[in-house]
Length: 348
Image 1 (cartoon, rainbow, N blue to C red):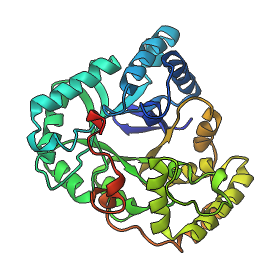
Image 2: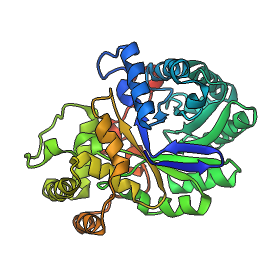
Image 3: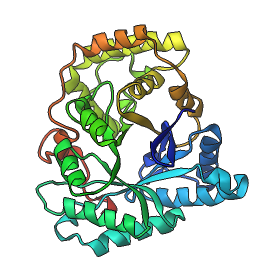
């Protein structure tokens, strides 16, 4: 597994195990099995785990894993484990948010994860028209200075707001953002901003909820309603990208590239993102270890110039998505924003 240093004395695996699929709403999870799955990921070299305060039960599961891993492999092995969580205050909380509230949520995450100091906290703010996002970022910096957070980071912020946060003196380590072969909005400004300010990019959505996979190659365009909200979300991205026929052309090229490397389409789609400037890691969702071999292959394959040129030839025909990072999703009345859930701590 490739590893990368994104800050002094802070190294991560270039494939990050996402935790969303272990949350409530994705079917029953057996805690002991989930912990053993995480042990398998860590032993295989995927030592960085992503979660959030809003992923029901996931911080607790990772906390149990950390204790188990220390027992099994010792403190030195545990020291290589990195846990990236998120601070996502509900939309209804934003108008009255306070430092005491922020600290209480951070303290809860510390307790759940069995960490005195959180490795990395990714801050999300649902609505820029509600004041408080900049003050909240500064409060997170103060909690960092108090020793409760190691790295302050963000998720789904656009370029203007990240510039303001950095200008306010908040040391920004990374940004988690939707970035895939279908959604290249970060290439508008964010990639350059990351280079100028030395923060890393973590990509989610690299397989577009499963659409960038072999099961959709040659299939007719699906009708609504789709089987889950994730597919609904990424089908909108496909529509904006250029429609089903162009999407199928991309899948065909990815299949040809995958054949050369002996892997599947999803692996190529994620591996392609690791070649993009500024991208430190890709986040792969995993309910269990069933696809661990494929997850490991993401960082193993080396795409050739021919591979990249064939992929880029299809992408050159695509329509660029509108706006900056997460701009479409922030329009709560629009096609992309209307399907979002904004009060996840309350289960809404």
